[in-house]
Image (cartoon, rainbow, N blue to C red; front, side, top):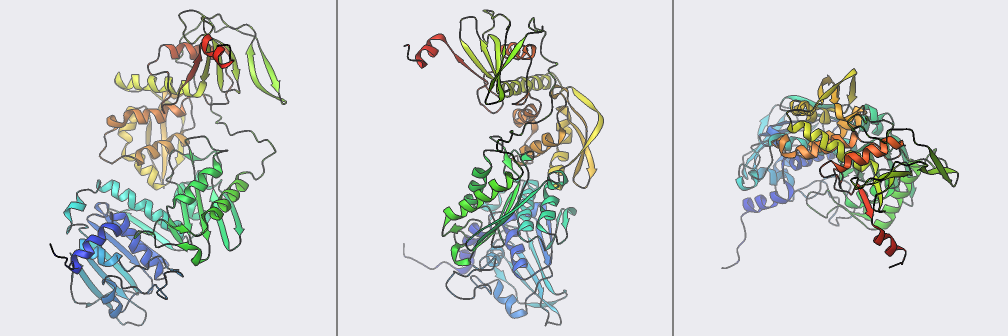
Length: 572
């Protein structure tokens, strides 16, 4: 078969697969065009998750009819000062987005600059361009994308549900909102306002996106190394999330999802944030344009730094300094303060007063030894408790002399998990009404995600209702959880639901939701237990399914037999 040149229309459709992966990518390109045009206010409206319709309206510089004709041509751009691809200061520069969109959708652009006495309109449908015509319109640009991927049905069928695609687009806009906080940004989803942000400073903008509670505690920091300047905001370790969705990175004004920056953030906080949790943070990095390659991928979400080690060092040192402000030489680790109920534990003969003594090391009690521990019975595989170490681990001795070490949080998490699951299988989780309903400010997206599943969550004993402005009113919690703070519980549940497709049934992911609940209803590491509580925990573990691992798959206890201990000491 001989080689042939592909027609331009087909080339644009192929390119669209790289540039316009889903509606969120289309929104990103259009909003970045508006920002490059100097817009001070941008309004975005989506219908059907952006699959049916995307509309972006801005008050930027606009285009005359000549520029309008060129903007839908492949590799036509006004954003490159030269041909070197070095001093790239604009968000867009490749000249691929609009022709790619026009190749796979029905595209309409109405634009007017300050010198024109009327606006002009151009249309592109499936790659076919119609002549420019006069139109009504104020200064700026209005872009409408309808029937996205109608010309490439194979791509369209791989999209997720409309609500899931809307969520992707909303998350994309939040990154752009933090990249340009001075620009007012409004988002409508199927006629409902998701957010309407005025021009703001960075801290106010981030607080508006993550919720008032975490927003009020944000720590500001800045650092400089040579020509690199870093500024940012991070929430204290008390405010973490179950995933990394509330981490925002901006480099030279460009919102990115760069792995170098994400890794640096993770390294910087790992000593102060619980393993498996993720910080809430926003970072703005500025460096000379020739120290950065933004032409790595058509989507321009990833970057290549000339000196990545220097970037990592700057981020890590700045964040560690910010989180260490005001701390003493040996700060105590953060410990959740709620005290969960132990009410579902069975009665135990060990619920009697047992004397204990503390063994001080380096001036701080790290071990509490029971002077009169209850006897170990042969029918108790996990043995009898003899001490608590670091207010986190229970040491027990079995009847055969085996040594048992129990992680109290992991163990109780499994017990709570199985208790809730058993109630669910029996017909419904028992709820406990709050004496005073709690109001939790989550931000619009998290609140809406939870409220869409309110009926399902009620089956799990969690009763919620809207309270306006991104807030949720909590009326009842699962009784098995005791009395946890509902705010971190709801934030984690929102993170869990964010990872689902909207069509996913709760029953299909029941175990994951119950695991989130159980984690918040469990004895925390750092809580001191008395002898009766330690004994009751061991006895309940012995009769609970899956008690060898916590809800996240980590072991709840380690058991060393006499032979294994002797081997460790070289006796065998």
